[in-house]
Amino acid sequence: MASTTAFFPSFRFPVPSNAKARLASAPRSGTISCGFSNGREPEEPPGLKDVQRILEEKRRAELAARIASGEFSVPQSRLRSAFRRLGPVGKFLDEMLERWVGVGDAQRLKIPQAKGSIGAVGGQAFFIPLYELFITYGGIFRLTFGPKSFLIVSDPEIAKRILRDNAQDYSKGILAEILEFVMGKGLIPADYDVWKVRRKAIVPALHQKYVAKMIGLFGKASYGLCEKLDKAASDGEDSEMESLFSRMTLDVIGKAVFNYNFDSLTHDNGIIEAVYTVLREAEMRSTSLIPTWEIPIWKDISPRQKKASQALKLVNDTLDDLIAICKRMVEQEELQFHEEYMNEQDPSILHFLLASGDDVSSKQLRDDLMTLLIAGHETSAAVLTWTFYLLSKNPHVMSKLQDEVDSVLGDRLPTIEDMKKLKYTTRVINESLRLYPQPPVLIRRSLDDDILGGFPIKRGEDIFISVWNLHRSPKHWTDPDCFNPERWPLDGPNPNEINQNFSYLPFGGGQRKCVGDMFATFETVVATAMLVRRFNFQMALGAPPVEMTTGATIHTTEGLLMTVTRRPQPPIIPKLETRTQIVNGDETVTLQEDQQGEVSVAPL
Ligand code: HEM
Image 1 (cartoon, rainbow, N blue to C red):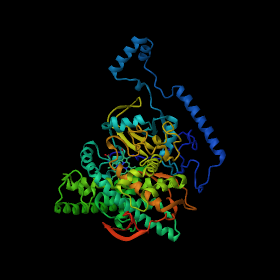
Image 2: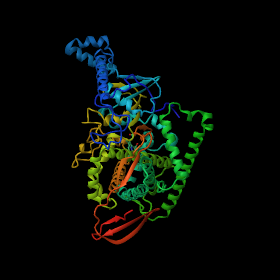
Image 3: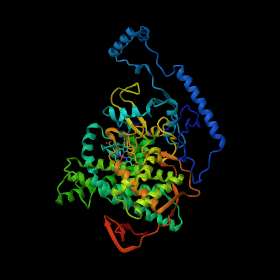
């Protein structure tokens, strides 16, 4: 494995420790509420904000003075200064010199530097100090600690250049090195040559008919969660929503990618534990300062390492078995392969890939499946976790959301047609993804020299594009920290990186953009709609404060403990007692039909 540098290192910076940014920087707790709250978290004392404002103003004034003093500028060469004094002729000579030696305006500037020393930040999510530094140093700055330096990018134009316009000159760098043990050459870490072939093979598998079919799967998985919550409500128990969302999305992605029913909402077994062990190991490696997993002897004696290796072996063996089973199914079936090919019994991505005759080694296929499993699991779980946190803090949004869901869905399971009608629900997800992007930073390494934001950068630079900063930049958003789904008009287009000009990157952008964006949007919309239709959600009394920590996605430090209560049922149109049990895979749901022929899920 190449580099041993942790990619989310801890660090301290020369900024006042509690100096929140001018426009209220991201708080350490996840509290994002704009005047509305269910009042279950202590407020800050009134004087504190003033102190922070004064400190912040002082810091900005000092910085302005340092910039004015030329601290961030490299002196021009004497020759070029002389040319500049010669008017138009000098300008011509200057340009000639520039072309000849390749020295542009850019190279006269030095990227602002933030120096830090490696040290613990007491559990603080690493992207929070990056926000403070962004407010101080701007859309691109160099963060140096010890021998290592990173470029931190928080500017939409620069992000656009790296992700889209000059994407071929950037690789996944440290991310690929750290994830290699689990994803191998899967789509996320893959270098350009492998990526190009695999992306072409995988993207067609997520065709419209497949995604429409998945809506049923999302509905059933969400229904499973409703059953769990209903039981907790009956028993008067609070529910830890983060782990429940994680289990629900694991069940979804297992079926969707390789037709495996983890059934983790109702069971705990070896394979589920193994998946979580592997995920945690990947996250630990991505946040660890010392890469103990690379030390030869330690690797063999450390109990954690041994456990991780065994877990990975179990997951890999299971994937190999699933690939073998699926191969046999494909050999026996008579379906002709075509663009929107889908096996109704097994609509999984694996089945599509094998039926397509994709000529790929089993190892590559396993890497792809593992990548899809990881990419599509924790991301969706994190989106749901933070959405429900935000909803609990913003009851006015919750009640508007519930009104929409009541009127569009009633008691039905959502269908693909409902996705267009659940407009406000979609805006809630869009806005949740703005405030809590998953992942909060995108990682790249330059493969060639380039100019970013007017600054020259060298080949081999490690770069963090802070989506967190982009999504909360006071330059681009009104009340950036405010949870306000109304900022996206219902009759407007779905916000994405193109129509927001790279200020909004919930699914990345350019050629490495997420392949599961539609899948994930529908999954989170369906789950949100089905849950708020049936329940109200409040932070539990005595719940631990909701603070952020990070691995690949933003987690809470101590879970999201909520009191979930049943909503009173709206008036029910008399039902014809036609009850049908439908079985899909291992899941059974009872449906009923009313006099208008509308099919709905039978009450829990
Ligand atoms: C709400 C949930 C999701 C979010 C927020 C999300 C976000 C992202 C982002 C930001 C990227 C770009 C990473 C980069 O440029 O470095 C990405 C890539 C990717 N995502 Fe997602 N994702 C989600 C769900 C899914 C799902 C459900 C799948 C699969 C079914 C998936 C599969 C992938 C893959 C394979 C890539 C790599 C694409 C490439 O490099 O060509 N994601 N995702």
